[in-house]
Length: 146
Image (tube, rainbow, N blue to C red; front, side, top):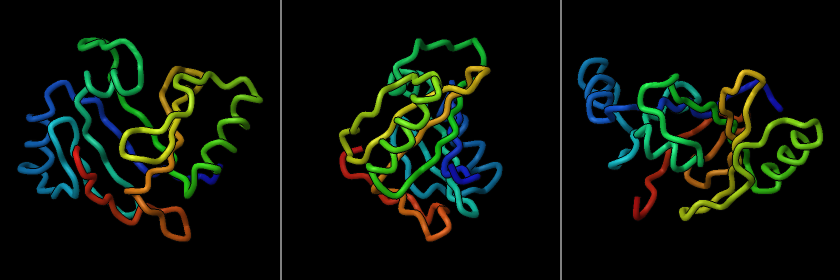
């Protein structure tokens, strides 16, 4: 894997309050938002605030409102084939796979795995987050229906 991250996601207990803090207090302007998430564009990556319950459901892990914080580190790639290449590579060295590769309703392909301390990482091909030649996120396009 190239040494880079594409999306940092924070599982928010109160998404509305978090959205207000980042948008109104810090002055960051969302590039995409809906009832469950909001994305902010930075220099080559995205910060995502994601309702913690919705994020838990999406990943397929138990929801814990008061436990350790929930965040994910996303490594976006350019194709579904690249997702599967990395999936098989990580599986071959016994990395703990949390969620098997799947295609979300909006397209693309992703899977989740954990590091040795249980932190959650995602490998994803998302047609709505194109990458430049160096692997930096260019933007997050609006997703119809979300």
